[in-house]
Amino acid sequence: MAVYALGDRVPEIDESAYVSPEATIIGSVVIGPRSTIWPHAVLRADDNYIRVGEGSSIQDGAVVHVTGELETVVGDFCTVGHLAHLEGCTVRDHSLIGSGSVVLHEAVIGPHALVGGAAMVPGGVEVPPHAMALGVPARILADRLPDHHSREGADSYIERGERFRNELRRLD
Image 1: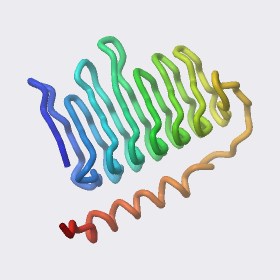
Image 2: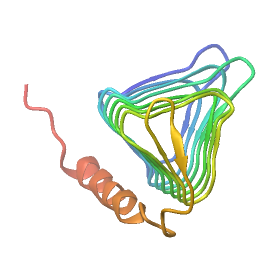
Image 3: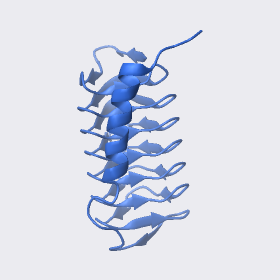
Image 4: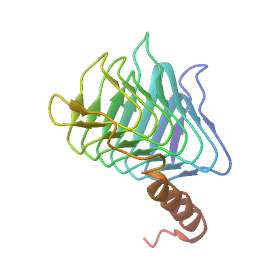
């Protein structure tokens, strides 16, 4: 894996987390226990902090970034889908960020919420708990999801991370 300090900004990766050899982690990034960071994901915290909680998955090709004023926080047991982009936002526990979606500055994704694939949540928008955010720009559909709607997916990536940690081997 490509893990870089940037001056005095040094990543902190829990020993139980799985970070793919092809992921890139730069600067003030904190990755919690049992979280997984998949191939070609980039977590770049050059001007602020990125915090990924316990059991969360940042999937292939996702980009997580910050601004000078705004950190990016991903809570516990969240899934950030393939090719998603998070910047200067907060994703609360047990939420799902769909593949190819974008969540921008000061947006807050409530607990147990979902941002649909290819949706765009503009800066400053709050997606309430249990809601769905769909489309470009995202339209909010309130009270659509039960508690832990995404927990099975999060748990599967925790298990997958263990498998990759133990079985992945390069052949070339």
